[in-house]
Structures are given as structure tokens and as C-alpha cells.
Length: 428
Picture 1 (cartoon, rainbow, N blue to C red):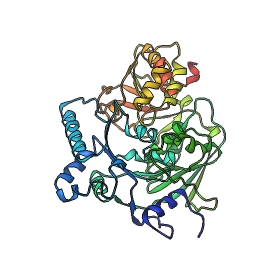
Picture 2 (spheres, rainbow, N blue to C red):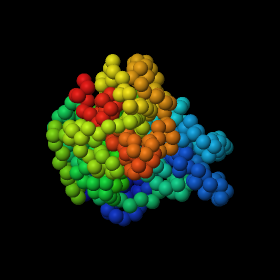
Picture 3 (cartoon, helix red, strand yellow):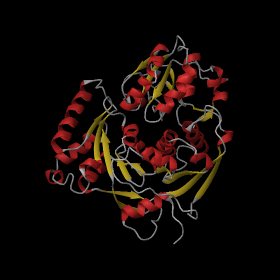
Picture 4 (cartoon, helix red, strand yellow):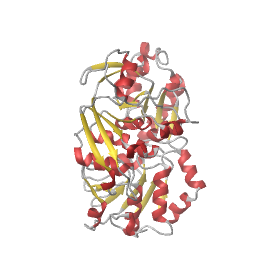
């Protein structure tokens, strides 16, 4: 048998295959971890309540400690509908023994699960949220599923999925100052388009990939879905082991691709040629160098630093370097959303929380909030925001006449200080 990719190895183990899976063919996989949130879990719950016989199977095929419900998209509850959803999910989780995590006490799902060591290298992770592909950052095969799929997974421990074609993205070179994983994935999406990797695996390798922090890896895997990919993934290495050491809640089986693994396509990326990126409305593929964007003198009214793609400690440390001793432009309001409660406390211990408030930011406990246009920082007609979030679709963060520009935390901070899209070197 020829060499195998990471995704092939995990797929074969989970599907019980002796031969490599065929791209485009559907297989049943044994799931290692599954979850839903306050947007997707209610429908799964309603389906389960309609089938009492299915409820009896909860925990039988997938242990309940390998499942979770998250209250993170509409938390703290901004309206009565959200409050009722929270009440219902809490009651169901309590009655049937499903772990329930909240933004304030735990964090945003895609930030909290790897931090808490609940999703691990070699796992098959199925989450009722499109950005479940995040966990490829730790070397897991992870992908989003629908709410009815979640109901089936909770009662059977299995999920059907088509095997994706394998694409390799080889990252070489040294990162420029102020460049991080957000820029690498925005640049890549800009090159191949939002549908460019549809039905594909985006596997990241190369000397530059090996030097990336776990924060960068999780961000890149998270946004693989913005290129249409089934999953994004990194091989397990020393960075992975160091991250998982002391976090892992159970034993895990890390895998890496074989040297002679075959790929349908290989894309080479020279990261040394990439400067900080800004994705213009209304698609993540509209990525441009920040120096080009800065020349257009695009005034902004809001900056958002946070979410599952820009709310980790590393992101806030980058923003803090830009904000040191400075204040947001008078026309700009700032919102800071730490990804987890632990990150919130780390920011407090390091004095970054204080610096954010002194710079003019509103600081919230972890919530998805404005990322999906739910609450806490919606944009009015004609307003523009620079955000470290992962999507900038029309009306994503408010009115249809508003605009969202995606960038890393340092670019967001610099833009907030100058009141226009700016390169961090213009401020620091």
C-alpha cells in the first residue's frame, strides 16, 4: 500500500477500512466527540424528544463525556427567545447528562474545546457548526454537520460523510513582522477562492507550517471552511504534543502523513512574500495586502478583536503591542471578546485587560455575539468594521448597508487607533 495522508489514516480507523477510502464515496465513521450550540442544538433536541426510543440510546454508543452543548452564540441572552433557548438547553442537558458549557464560565466552543483538551489528535470530531474544522489544528479530522445529523450522532455514535480529495499546501519561508496564521489563510483563500477547495482536505505542511504556533494552526484550520473545504488539518508534531501535554482529558493517537503519501494537488506558498492581509467585503476571498488597503484611506467606525479565530491570548498580545499607551480614534468604538474564560483571566493577570479598557475598548466575557450579527456591536447603515472574525458576508455583523473587513488583531488595533484601515507599522 502506498503512503497515506493524515486524513486517510484517521478515516480508515474510524470507518474500519483496510484499504484507502475513495474520494467522493460516502462512509460511516465512528465519532470520538460531538457537540452542538445554542443555534444548532435546539433542533437536534426537538428531534430527539419526538423519538423517545432514540433518547434511550444517549450515551450508549457515544459516551456522554464525549458530547457537549454550548451556550456561546447568544450569551449572555440578548432577548427573550435566547433566554428561552438557554432555559430549554440547560434543562435537557441536566436531565440527560450531557455536559453544558457557557461562554462566561468556559468559552466559545472552538476556542474552549482544544484549550480544555476535550478534542485531541487523531479524533473524529463532528460538530453542528460549520467551523468545527478548527480542530484540524491539533491534528483531528473535524467537520461540521447539520442539527439532525447531530441527533443521530448522539444516539448512534456514527456519522455519514463523503471522503474528501486530498490537497497539500506546502508553506515555506519566514513570516514577515506582524504576519500570523490569519494572514496565511486569508492569502490562501484569496488565491483559490471561497469554493476553491470544495469537497477537499486542506492539509498544511512545510518548514513554515512547522514553526506556526497552535493559535495560528487553529485559526487556519478554522477558516478552511471559507475555502469550501471539508476539513483543514496539520500533522501532529512537537508543537502539538507540547500543547496537548497537561490538557488532554484522555489518551489520544496522533498521526502524521507518510512521506510518500499521494495528493490530488499540491500548492506551494512562499510565506515570506506575504504581508498582513485584509479581506474586503463581502467574501473572505477578497484578500489584499494591508499596505494596498491603507492607501485607500478607508474610514472605520468599529474594531472587533475576538471570536474563535482571533480571540486567543496570542491575538491580544499582538494587539497590546500596537495599543500600548494609545487610545482608539474618537470615531471608533472597540469590542474585545476573549475566546475563553481562561484567556480572559490571562489578559487580566498580564494587565492587557486594563490596557484594552484604557484604550477605549468594551470588554466582554466570551461570546460569539457580533461575529454572526447576533448582538453586542451591530453595525448601522454605512458603518465599517475591521474584525478578527472569520466571515464578512453582507449583513454578517449588522445592516445590509454595513461592511466588515477581516484582518489579524494587530491590523485591527492599528486601524482602531488611526480610524482607518492601517498597517501596524504606521502606529508602532
